Image 1 (spheres, rainbow, N blue to C red):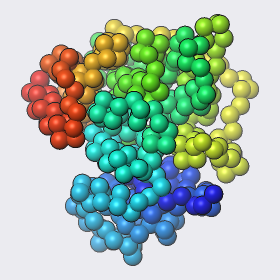
Image 2 (cartoon, rainbow, N blue to C red; image 1 turned 120 degrees about the horizontal axis):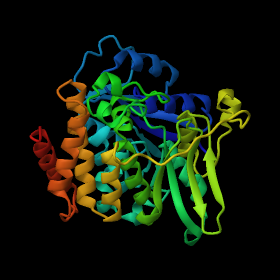
Image 3 (cartoon, rainbow, N blue to C red; image 1 turned 180 degrees about the vertical axis):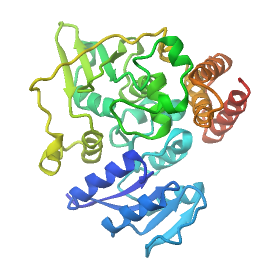
Length: 383
């Protein structure tokens, strides 16, 4: 197998950094030829010397890169990021946060470039436009999220008619031990204290409200063409199990792994093969010894945004799903600026979902972009 060329979008973020670690550990299989980054120039400066194969870097916004020791080309902005696809990589890793990645994801798929997808909003926004024949095709989209990478392993070659329930798990996030009223009044600093995962700010906040799990339900629906009625969530604080299947004969299968994104990233990069991760990262060796595992149903009163997601999913309300994702991004940005509390996220998302539910989902890239703008404008005015 030849060495695959990869473009990483968001290389200085959590997923990007761990992708870089996998690539560095398996140089005979992968090489990064280009990447995009945010404003974390110091982190980029650490990464670039380890990958001499990188010839082009795009910064999301204008920033000072004068101290960056790099012989390749540096560009700035959204259009320059899209132009990275002209390098014709074998695959891209889409690790940009929020809505930032959806157009690049769609463009890559249309160009025949495989997308290793860590940006769940891309599928929520563009799933209807792409269609399940595309989203369910692993030659086009391979999931990077730990839950969906687990489902990919569990569902591969599986007779779907045997399934009774399909579970993704949730840690419960930073606010899991607070009451509903305490959670509603929580600020950004409290919601950012995730008990397990080290992630970017938006996905950490989304984990605290469990809106993230709603996005993951939508993503599972598009990725695996599963009936909404069998998709479910289990709160599992230890985060040893990432997904599970219940069968009609009463038996069950689960995927267990160390709580590290190295495992699902490696699974996505190497699909349909399996990398010997443990040989390079011994700490990834999962053991059942002395494991205590707890599972419980999520509290849909405390987490109203997850309840909203279940409703949207069961109704196949695609425009409502887009509103769910976009309004949340607006609200999370406001929380991070200390303009609102967690209850403000609840109010913004639920109001936007109510406003945009049941509409005909846009069916072109231009229409989707216009719909996103409309949702954003509305969401800014909710509170």
